[in-house]
Length: 229
Image (cartoon, rainbow, N blue to C red; front, side, top):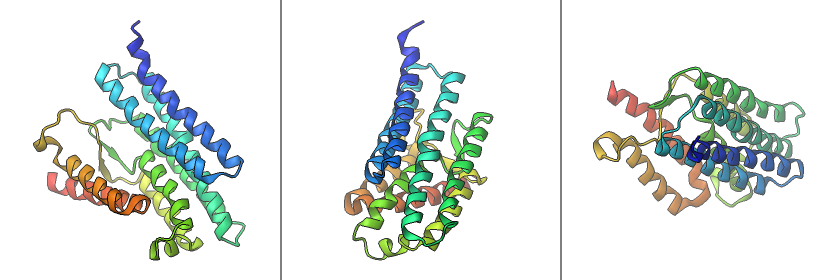
């Protein structure tokens, strides 16, 4: 068996390792490093899929391993981040536990993905996008981003956002994928528009851009669906 068959799974294991290390950082109380591990995991998650397509070694085991890794990195770790933030911001003993809706709904979303065909796109918000979004919250809350910081610092607002994100994970909403079968403008214009706008937003607004990039992704996905119809 050629070594290239194992390359995607090795990269997926990097994603999983980042998830484990991020959880350890949460146990030790370091939100910042935990968020960095989510970003590193997202990189591994992107290149493992790219390498699988490049080497043409897509396997059932690889798909299952990818979902198991995502469950830790983008299902459990973001929930721990939200739980910690809600504990810090809220005087309620109940509200912080709403964070683990993210874990439960991520598990449902990933299980659904594994038993369905979602190659051209996704149904529901992808767990990596959700994880990256949540990982931006500690930086925005601790930063000086005006109304956005005030908005996210409200525990009720943050709890409501947690519920909305949980629902979006399993919602019957079509989302486009950033997988490229070719690089032509005609077949990938929505992807190119999203990438260009995301780069511009991040260039001007840095970490504060992440929530708006994810919101733009959702709106663009829904709009693209209506255009295709």
